[in-house]
Image (cartoon, rainbow, N blue to C red; front, side):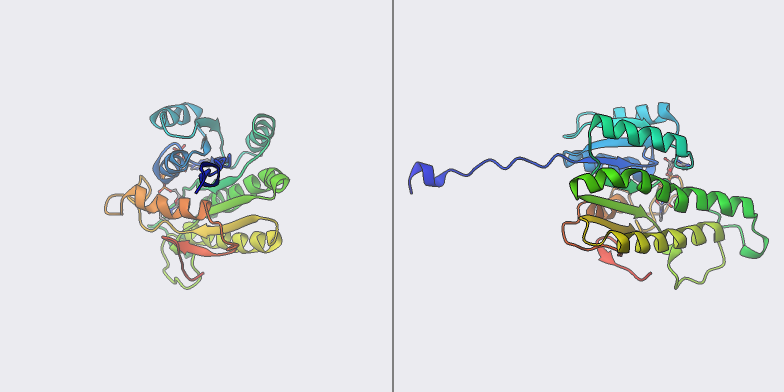
Length: 243
Ligand code: NDP
């Protein structure tokens, strides 16, 4: 074989920009770490920017750049400012991980639940993801590529019939429904929308006894890299689970 015939052209890696909400700790921080290790530029969303800057510093040295950005997913003004900044700075967004979460209420029961706290859970899990996706979809459509990963929970599966954590369960169930309708609208656009349950993970929210954070994050990162036209699915550890 001649020298010319053996020549393999260099493959230029695709430049990808990812945004992870609630990434100053827990699963979000680990997802940011794993995506940056893949070489993506990662925007590390934190509602307290100081916490975000400290978290981003922990990830310095990874293959991809990590930049802390202020992001409270209940604040439309912050989302609009961030979307505009991403457009001006990068002109693209390839991966959106709707991870920000809170309002786990295991001691509460539906019949005596405080509606204000249920509303707050919906505002973060459902409407936070919805606001952020709406603001960033135009940037994904521009390149005909996008991966939206909604970090959900088996608690939101329709088949579960526990009575505890009602605000958490109902809001994650709503996030699952939103995942399906958005995926349906975007079919054929190059933008895949999926929900992922990370399993029980030993974060501040999950508490001790859960599995390592890196294991829970891996299933989220898997969905952020899906190359098949799989959309509108609900996964744990890369395998489909029941809605
Ligand atoms: P943590 O409590 O460790 O982290 C939650 C993150 O969400 C923090 O960064 C927090 O910010 C952020 N956050 C909360 N509210 C907002 C908001 N309004 N805007 C922006 N960020 C916000 O939780 P986990 O890492 O465990 O949870 C991450 C996701 O995984 C959640 O959606 C959760 O429901 C889901 N999940 C977790 C499981 C587990 O076992 N851990 C199981 C199933 C699902 P701050 O530091 O400012 O509070």
